[in-house]
Image (cartoon, rainbow, N blue to C red; front, side, top):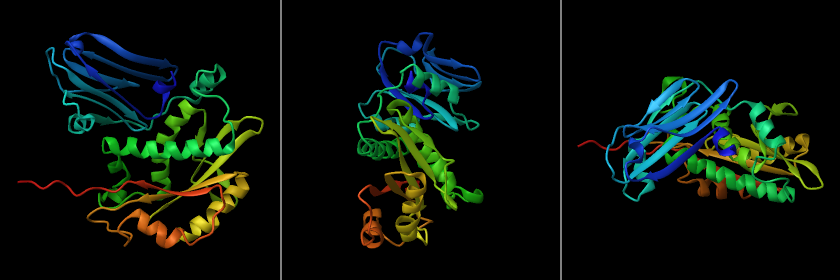
Length: 300
């Protein structure tokens, strides 16, 4: 249940023996003000959310097919392709349509949580929660890059060579992280206020015998002029004001052939040069999210 009310998710499977020729509803989630449905017919797969619709190309016959259905907060998509055994081969077969910013209603999440329909209960400790969030950030990065989602953080002022500002990128990343929260019993917020500034986003979850634990997340572009200050000053201040025992300094790695910033060749080089010399509390980690754009393929 939680999988299908996630803010972003991908469903992949192999279809055999002409399955897609059947008229089938693969899944359907209906709630007041929200509907998500996927199905197949006549050799095609479709996905529909709140009245907007996208279908795949058509492939008829009994051959084995690779099927992918995907949704994020601002798009829905699907694709089919002849089976090759390579899950990454689906990328060029995906068809997607942009949608208004859409998330499942909070009432739905509260109902799932109240009826113990979410995977997991209280965390054993705040360290356990911290390890889970770090793992889910890595999984979110993989989700974003799997079908080229990193392109959606580029295009500031209509210029495809400029990345968006940190708050916009953080909302995008947080929407993927929230999909794991729906399944792993933590909540993500982009609206937390700490002291004189705004924390980019933060996580809260129940911990056995300790009530609620929080993880503050401060994010900066890798090219930000005050990267060290964000790590050494801002993040600890946010943690203190949120009463968070753990904090994550998220660095967005945003390079492209037309945006060669910062001068470091890789995030590990930047981290060793700028962040490793700085003192940090035991519950603080610096983590990168690679949202760089590869060069466009050359044309013959």
